[in-house]
Amino acid sequence: MDTPVSTPQSEISASKPRIRVGIGGWTFEPWRGSFYPAGLSHSKELQYASRQLTAIEVNGTYYSTFKPPTFAKWRDETPEGFVFSLKANRFATHRRVLADAGDSIARFVDSGLSELKHKLGPIVWHFMPTKAFDPADFEAFLALLPQQVNGLRLRHALDVRHPSFATPAFLALARRYGCAPVCTDSDQFPAIADAEADFAYLRLMRSQRDVATGYTPAAIAQWAEGVRTWTTGERPRDVFVYFINGAKERAPAGAMALLQQLGMQRIDEMLGRDRHRLQDGKHVAGVGEGRLETPEDDDHHGQDDQEAELDDEVLDGKG
Picture 1 (cartoon, one colour):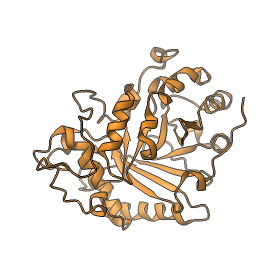
Picture 2 (tube, rainbow, N blue to C red):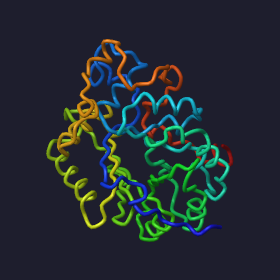
Picture 3 (cartoon, rainbow, N blue to C red):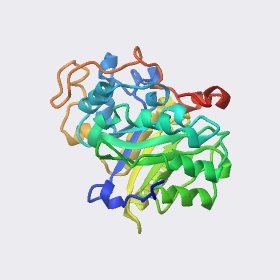
């Protein structure tokens, strides 16, 4: 077994740490007419969303295997500066013995995600809330995670849900293998952050239906201050923030409110785009042609990860 080496933050970030703020998926019916302009076709939803936000966490890769041309289309349909975080396929993590996940991990990593190129953000490895921390088995799993694919450096975020992971031993393993824990703002799951990780990955899951932006202005201001600390503190790093789950219909508004609080422009503003050009059906310069995978292709893009709580016995040994 090769000795794992933590990737220096300077090697995987630009010269200045960057903040990415986004949502989970881009296909969600309640967003039509609220986030998406009326009349916007499904095939242009990714184009539109990627110009209002700076990142999207893709949930469809958790349920299904996509082909290289799909990743290439996602890359070409989004502007420079935008990134995708990908949830790893469930068969890699939903098993009793994580040490046996090597084939599933390889199939996912080699499925074509390197086609995203510089728009590939962290890979999120999601573990069931019932999966307790077993140090030996979890280390065996981390040792299977590749550091790169086709010359593209990979970053791994560990989305653990069981309270037993809230221990220094887990953080020590994550650091040793160059991974970062997902810090979850949730009533159900532990919030685990690591001041020594090469990047920070936040999933904000307390959105409220009766608040226009999901989180109150005061809460968004508080999160903005925390994000600034991560990018400017003693160990500056890239930060990825996703408004996801909770009152999901409020997620885009929350993400855009945080961008505004951080003093960051939407990508469409940085590019000088008119947000209505997509609605009018006109070609946007720099946007690749070709049909994207939409709800008709895979209806899991907009699903919350709580829907993925499958029986370990069913998945054990498969994938």
